[in-house]
Length: 144
Image (cartoon, rainbow, N blue to C red; front, side):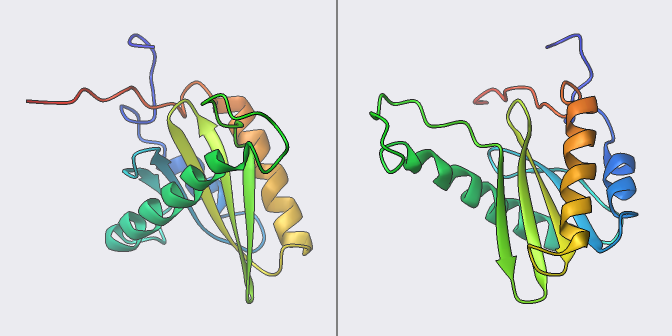
């Protein structure tokens, strides 16, 4: 992956801004699985993006505890997350596995069964399928 463009070395804000052009989409955020903002749509300021990345990262990490709950033996490998839907009052937050070591959050106006959410899910899945290698983040070294 070292010779390949990744989300931590390429400005991906343009693709997140394209998602916000979908009906009802308020903001989109690409983050690393250790909670760092990699890119955010223009409507999201940096402080809000940082808080959202930390929260989305936490939600993403929780999915790893569902292996036994789903009736599978826990062999230390969590079930891979595809997406999570959080149905809030008047909004839905969508969380997707985006690329290697990344996640993508999308805030949509409307309930989880709304047409806007269905369109946002479809648009986001298409974007992820088309850009998955670039949506990855390189593994960070431990530092000194």
